[in-house]
Length: 185
Image (cartoon, rainbow, N blue to C red):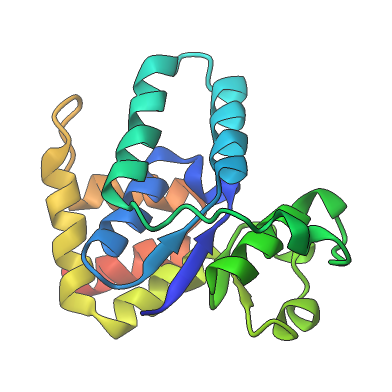
């Protein structure tokens, strides 16, 4: 199964994270991350969103670990030595992707993961907008059903598919949101 390492920055926007994990739950790909990535996401969420209840956030990450028990990559640390990236602090992400057998790293920070560098490991850096569009092209019925199911889960405030897509557009995946609108609304 296709495996994609989810960088911390795509786990930050709640609805984007939910969308990525809903599609993984439906068997479209295998998500990967490390505890370092989850900790980075948690720290950034709490720093940028002081209104977030830390206990609820911890529960979200616990549910992620529980529902995707094979997603957490461990033992990648020795691979970091010798990896060359524009930001040395991102070596753990590439090392986890290599060790976990990922075919891609889904990230907003494409400049930090040069295509040429990652190609040597048969890994592709992919913006979440492009990744979601690929999923939509590969399995449109599954993606649309997943998004509709997500929308029905929202009670406070209630959301329909159009509202979900508006939030996703604000979460920097506008092409995906527009293509879903074109196909479903």
